Image (cartoon, rainbow, N blue to C red; front, top):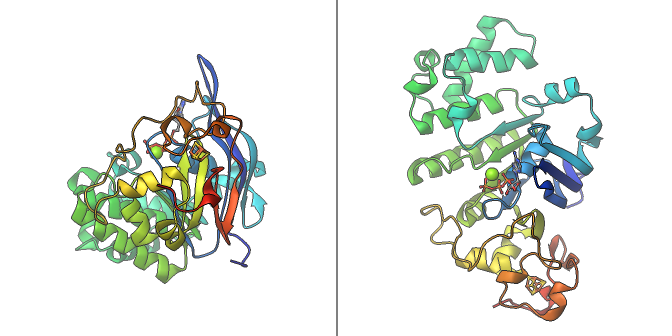
Length: 328
Ligand SMILES: Nc1ncnc2c1ncn2[C@@H]1O[C@H](COP(=O)(O)OP(=O)(O)OP(=O)(O)O)[C@@H](O)[C@H]1O
Ligand code: SF4
Ligand SMILES: [Mg+2]
């Protein structure tokens, strides 16, 4: 892809200070997102997906979290060096975010209308009536029936799927160029999940927005993403187009994830079928972090961090055996 990336994450390192010392939850992670592109980030629970998203948004809980290295370039500007006020302005306008559980992001004591118009008015100089009209339009756009009535509901009066639609309406109300969606459908049942993904896909095409979607579910990636980055223990294990990753997965961890994926968009797998568990960030293996669980492990795997090997344009994997052909 030749277009200048919209988002370019370079060697990101995010650390948490804990009682037992610092742990590096995101360790030298780099990836690009082009305008209008959908990048999926997939990996087991604890692999550093949310910490990556929170680092990009400047929303890490500080302390204990901090970005200890790297760059996060958005339209060529480093968000890590941007004044806080400017970053706040960017959030919700050029960059939107939706989280897994809308009840944690919607305030229970205010109506949907209060919250959506507030979001719009923080970023645009328009009056209350105009913001309300826009809010109703946005609710209609995300498929909420009778939006002119629903706008006066409180969050608890809506179903989980409807609340997630409201979150999407809020995130999209200022037409962001980039949407970070962290497990946007995991809390919902399978049918609603598929509807919300269809909706996001339609809006993404209509608005030409780029999306980073974080998920446990390879089925969601297959349906939704153009490219995928597979994370393991704070690092990227493999990255490539969805076609390449599904046709020629080269990191044994990716192979494990794919073989543990049931039907597309079926019940969300917690990806527990790969034997063993993610290593503790306090006791990381000296070489490849996947080594304790890897069927292809050889002695050299423990010698040091496996380099990223280029396998095809845009396809790379951090496995010393990645060029040997199909992993078992
Ligand atoms: N507030 C915190 N304090 C200390 N460590 C933290 C904190 N938040 C995250 N971490 C560390 O960062 C690691 C990665 O967490 P993260 O939330 O990014 O995982 P994830 O990939 O999003 O997992 P999930 O799929 O469960 O959402 C955790 O395993 C934990 O060790
Ligand atoms: S580097 Fe070695 S241990 Fe790590 S994934 Fe590749 S083969 Fe397995
Ligand atoms: Mg998470």
